[in-house]
Length: 232
Image (cartoon, rainbow, N blue to C red; front, side):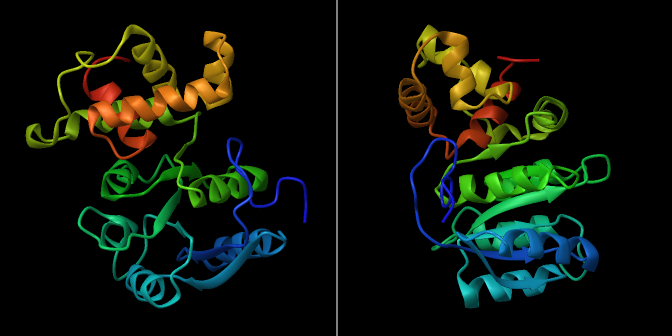
């Protein structure tokens, strides 16, 4: 097993990670399956090309991570994500959305539906593998190249009933600094370097921010930051 097998940038080994790949483009799907299966700590347990099959296979196979396309026949990736990872799902499955940003304007809706993060389809293989490992351990992944454009563009679509508490109130100045950097797509290590603190301290701050604001993960924290004008 390689040195980083079963690990994300900020975590320890978690063992074999079982992956379900969903994409309606066969060549794209086959490419991802080949890349993932070549890793000693990752295993593709299923693949499919439509949303209804994703929901059925996720229930049957219980993968650790579903790599989810957005635009698929029968049932799109957004609704499929909502059904396997959305609010109210008893035993949710972690979802990593892989999208062509210029085409998939609804990927933000997929994040709201319960996805733990997203990557671009033209991301290098190493980034896809890192994304799967990161999501598998319960963390979130936002492609830093498109975080600001994507979330900033669609954050205004959140309905008033879904808005988080008023901005800044319960957060300390340092927590606000961390939240702004997080919303900028920075990793824990990058935030630590910017603020001259340790990555472990950053993880503590992020945990406090999520708890104080009643948010599920880093994805929701980014949405909160844009929605409440903490970043533009």
